Length: 452
Ligand code: GAL
Image (cartoon, rainbow, N blue to C red):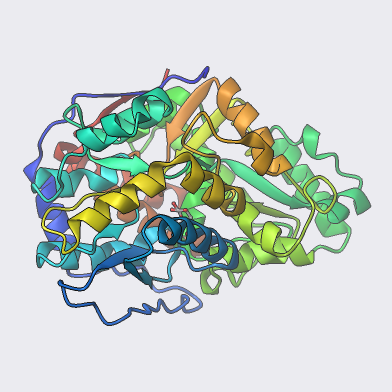
């Protein structure tokens, strides 16, 4: 693996615990959107009494591709542990923005489910700081995981040198998905779209060719997701400073430049974005209502269920300016203290970390396996190219929007600020808000990242 990424000096922080408890009150309200956001739903089965041999699992995999993938993983678990009743609670709301609040309430009430989805990196930190997770070094040892999980991922599963989670996958976040026939029809060669200028010129061509909104985007977090990739395109030094809490001047030229690019980007975006889920926006690329969608490679799962062929019906390229970079979103599960069915919880972690589990889940999900010994023949052409890109990556960077790179309160604030920006397009206001919030929470930056 070419990319280097290390996590230094994880410090125990009371700020993080306080932030966690504060956020139990519910998600921070967004600035009034022009169109109302998709309503989250939680379809929770009645919890089984503790004496029942059950496994309770919370996750936010509710789109077509995501559901097919989690079902495949659950099938592996059910084959290995046929006596355990599996109680899934899928919570709608991409990227876990809705589910995280629910989980925190349950965990703090001493009612943690046996397993719940989370992201590697910062997202587990408040739970660790509050002493709510059990270390799982033994499981890593018994399953021989250190030999098959890349160093970059291993680091992100640890706090204070001990393992607290197991990864199920590695998603890439800096990907543009495109509708091939629209690009062909308008004479656009996607391999040339390596700069923002070239990308916007292609959007102009598409508009002239009758594609009213060449870029499709969804609800608030997907706007923040796109902006995060634009920030990564400002270079690895800038991104590293961002996640280490060092972008503190509202006049920072790269921050202003990133916001200016995003402002231009929004000029090509569907005006109903706030009312769409991430997968609604991806579907518009599938149907040809739009040409481009910046999204993590869970989008591949939607093309998969729509039976689209990679290279013929759709394709991908790295977000302009991020060639050779691999933006990381890693889904993990952990072993919360005091779960009702600890043996089943550990069994779930073993399945999640296993070659069999990962090779059942990831080919559908769009991610690559977190294990280096995955059976590549089971993965489609998009993922085979992602595996090659991961190995060749010059730099890896942990996603902020997907919980890894920065303190959770920053992730939530970023989404709120960017949501406001999509309406007022005020560059200096957004730069001011982002940098003053970074200063306000300086004590929460307890992980120092080294991305080079
Ligand atoms: C990410 C998650 C992915 C995918 C996506 C959309 O945060 O890690 O697995 O599901 O959100 O919900």
